[in-house]
Amino acid sequence: MKKFLAVALVMMLSLALFANGTQEGGAASGFTPTKDVEWTCTSKPGGGSDIFTQQIKDALKTQGITDANVVISYVTDGGGEVGRLQVAMTGKNKADYTLLTFNSGDLMPMVKNTDNRIENFTPLAVMAVDKQLLFIGENAKYKTWQEVLDAIKAGKKVVIAGSKGDDIETYNKLIAELGVSEAQLSYITNDSTSGAITSLLGGHVDLCMSKPAAAAQYVEAGKMKAILALSQTRFTAESLKDAPTLSEFGYNNVEVPVWRGVVGPKAMSEEAAAFWSECLRQVSESQVWQENYIAKNGLVSEFKDYKAAKEYMTQYQADYLKSLGK
Image 1 (cartoon, rainbow, N blue to C red):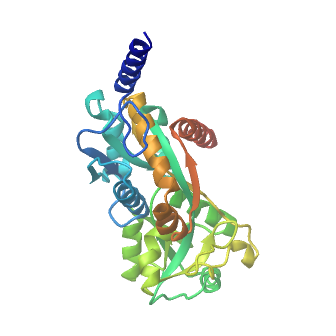
Image 2: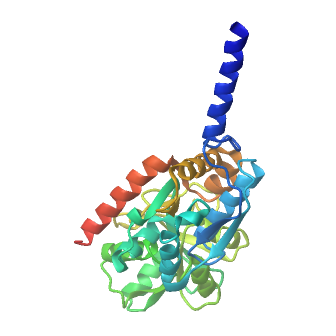
């Protein structure tokens, strides 16, 4: 009798494991990728979103979190709106194998200019918080932020190149705090930060707005230098720590923190959402992520799983829509 009960118990446990699925890399049970995963990035290669995506893709593989073959697809048309809409409309047959790099800088123009909303996606994780700086090129006309201020006061036109979304919001706050017009301190919008950096290095603009990650290689090579930290405090990274904040010039500091996350299509299953969220948690906790991405680029590590991310992104959207009077 005891032997029969023991066998029955083993069979029941086996059935339970079969029903729940197997685990891969410690990820949540119930779903395991069996085909290629398409990860959409709505910014061009070389920008902050691309670096974020590439770092996660590499960590998933090198840390043994999942063996899934992840293919990054760049869909930047319409300021990224085409890519976001494509992911939102992905059907159930592909939904579990579709990921999208998504941050506050994507959400703001999306809800402002289109009818697409966070409800059309499945939030999977918030990974980090990022902030901007203003940079000059190696052959810059103005070498310090004080020189930029003096030029504006003297009636000279100064031009900033940057990306969309949060960069534009930061620019608007900056000119409002300085009390200058768009004609005095102009802004040129690019599809990605890499495009803005190209404009700066080519001598077509005076300044470039960028997060640390996108500018890192150029700063290390001596091609760019940070002259203003658009944050409440100075950055701590060695290459950025000398950039002052606005308060050091008698103004209130300007800061538009950028949360960086990952979402899937609305049609993604609960099991797949749990799986990818757990994979991203493991990436967030890995030493390679903390050292090679967070610390290196001066970000704040802030992980939220798929349930917390949904609540967070939904509330962020509601607050932003309210600020727009929508």
